[in-house]
Image (cartoon, rainbow, N blue to C red; front, side, top):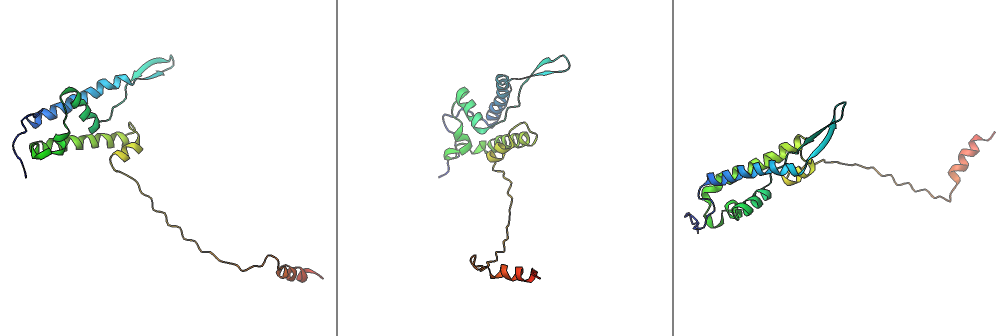
Length: 156
């Protein structure tokens, strides 16, 4: 039975609030990148340069972020008891943006392409067909008559 009312304990009352939480999550990843510095020494003088990686978006990371900051949000994505139907479009947009981020990051070499493919159910399939013709020879290894005929032809 569909229930199109509002859940009484909703964390987010409007889809825009969930969208804002996703924007906060993306900003938090920029801050998280600072925990993973890449230090390089460049130029003829070996100047120290610190660079920070691009952090991938993940749905699990977003859910964890929300759980810590706001509370559980999994039911918004699952539409538990049809209480969250009005959040369907923003949940789809969030999932699509996460997937796009991972795919582009994999294509551009920022993220591991193999993991990106697995996370997004992308796989390259190669079909190989091998055809083999097997000839079975009935040769008796103890019968040297074939060798003798060759040797006899060579004798004067």
